[in-house]
Image (cartoon, rainbow, N blue to C red; front, top):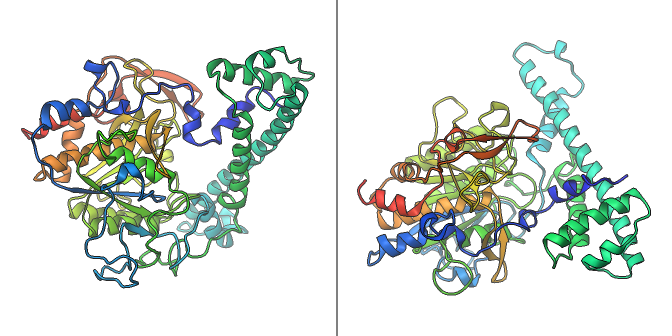
Length: 531
């Protein structure tokens, strides 16, 4: 039987833009000022108007480690990094950096000519790795030294089975939902019934009654809503992909992490396809960072003199640690001053190889900006660590030029923090606008979207803006400026508490992030001028 709660299951499977249909919508709200515009943006426009007029910036390279970006987007014209030492398409590694024809970046998820679209979740890869060794053993058969790894495997296997069961259940529910929905529309005689027609419809069973109530709620909130069937189909598609790729122990894509996928120190593999087959996520991020300002193309990026470098590390499933490490090294070696990493996972296959790359970036004065994650959880809990993290696994400390970003909304009230954003006084540094943002989409189009993935480039763009106008500041100093210049709300905010994320509580922002505030470009640039 389908119940009203099924709608939540469906929506949880959808991409972020669909989750915010009823949110505040205003292009470029992230650039507005709380005092002047009554919108909790980061005061970018005020900063340009009052602090940067007449000043001359230097170029800063921002690496977007992601799934690729549309390098031909109209709003990114002149903002895409082009390797000055490489001749396009000649099949020669002109700059001798190990990556042939890397004109706009690099793709670490493919072979010379082909890009890999789908991969597993990290949890699946860990199970596949450990299953041959531990599946037929018991704790009593192992030495004290081997027992922790065995117990970790058992815990991972239990979590894997739970997650796979959820998606099987979602698939069953969503398939039934679609069947009932199509039957209802057939009886009404229209594919897109109006609100009045839905209100007049007389359901014959509980399933149809629940779906009717759901559609009426959505039509009432959004009169133009007509995508219920499309969203259900998308949810079913995602559930199928979970089963076929993400949670499939038998699916292992060839070439997704080099010629020797077991060698995490292999460096030179992949291809120069910096766009990839579906670059929506990276394109959105690039627009927020550095879309050409004041050209009437839909979005004004935060930084006005950046070059955005595209480095692909995946498209489906979880990013591989080996690819993350190589992407960080590639960005660092090719001049990036800021690295945007809008991805993450709750498991890590080889944290050490990522830590090595992060330490290398730190030694070269690079600032890394990372998303906090969209699970509505407190990542200060050691069992909920969101990888990659700024804390080194060998206990040697942390990456000092690293900022982790949570997502905020436009209203200066208790709803300021998005319900999906992870948080943590120790593990999350700042919050930034991350709901109903408007940015670039492939094909020179534009979309609304939300998530900590999109709050992250707000901070990366701010970091780049500071480095543009104050190039003598180090990455650590830029981080310090950003954290010290936040706007701290004078009220408590709502967050979800506990792993079930069903209980809400009121907290001060200083209780759930290091800085206690939302980033602010005006304050940051004012501080940078006297730092």
